[in-house]
Amino acid sequence: MAVTLYSTPSCSYCRLAKDWLRQRNVRFEEYNVAADPRRAEEMVRKSGQMGVPVLDVNGRIILGFNTAEMERALK
Image 1 (tube, rainbow, N blue to C red):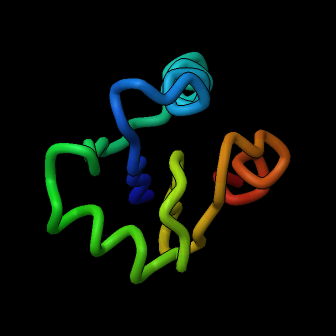
Image 2: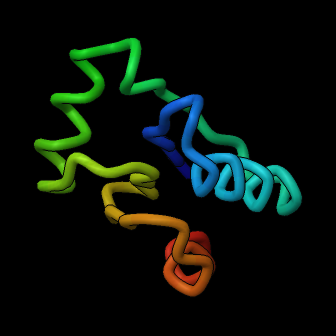
């Protein structure tokens, strides 16, 4: 399963998403879109959004810290 988290260091919901994933032993790749313009463009292209967090779970895009959607996508 491929899980990608687009985040920024100052985003509290990004920290919640990372903690949530770690508590469930979900491995994920994290990209800091504040420091990496290429990943920021990729995130906007995938989600149509500038806000973080954005999760990509096997191509399923989840906007924000939405635990119900995260649970469904990870099944």
